[in-house]
Length: 422
Image (spheres, rainbow, N blue to C red):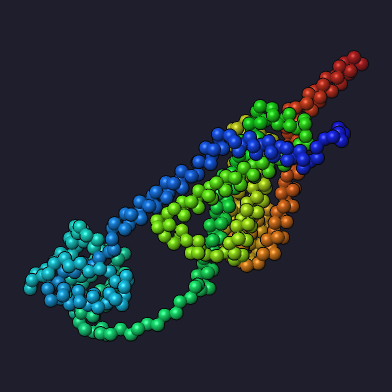
């Protein structure tokens, strides 16, 4: 039988706020959290440096060239043809590099030139403009064959001397490109949401195991309702996670802003594909779906923490949940490619995959009202998960506290009374 609650006791929300404020402050101003923030930034720094070095190396390698080894007259004709075609084709026409001007009857070893060339030669043209021979790797032949044929035809005078002016009409996008861009945004959003939830949800478990070891959780359970402890810890860790995401987003934004020349078009926000609901609504929905996914997974982790007494047990019990979350992520990714089909509706209806499926829909569809219904559905399941997890947590934790002592005392009293009657 539960004990009556004093009138002066805090309400559930007030008690949860006290616990949330305590945990949020303790974690936020700890040295462990500072180093936790630095952890994901090191791969980002290494990736940015590797991209910069790769860009420098790519620029230093230069554009591929086509080597040419023909008679002097044929070389001059091919060079003149290249000069005539270059203004028309622009960067689509590879540069020519004269390897050797052959004398009558002289031959040239194109294979040896390709393997031992010091330049950036992708292929070698030999023979004559009437019967040119292209020597190149298998992956390059298809790319260079048309250019060589056009050069040879122009050198022979078989190509038009004057190319007609081509009128152009530019459009911002097309239906196909917009669909691909939105699909890419949906994939990136799902992946980022999954990584953030899996990376940050583990803090709930570590905090719980630490407080169970030093008996702090039992002191809290004796002072305020267990549901408030459960809610407070969940929302404290959610707040800490949002602080971490804000810090990481600020650092990434600074990197993009400071390296515009290095990252090219990716540093320009206008070059990013617009999601279906627009960027402001998409970002707001991403935060909301992160909160829902985090609270759902966090409530499961807290329930697991109530069943475990050591770190080894926590790792063993949380592994099935982690693997299931990975499978649900792939399920939501598969459903993303089939909008409106039963598989997508199933991914939206299932609570743990719903945030991923709905974020993908936000990237691909302009409708906003379905997201309000989805958030209400997910909030309902968050409440169910919190309530169920808190009940399990209460039963497991209180077994090691005063309730267990009272149970032992009642058992001893019953045994003593039975012995006296005997």
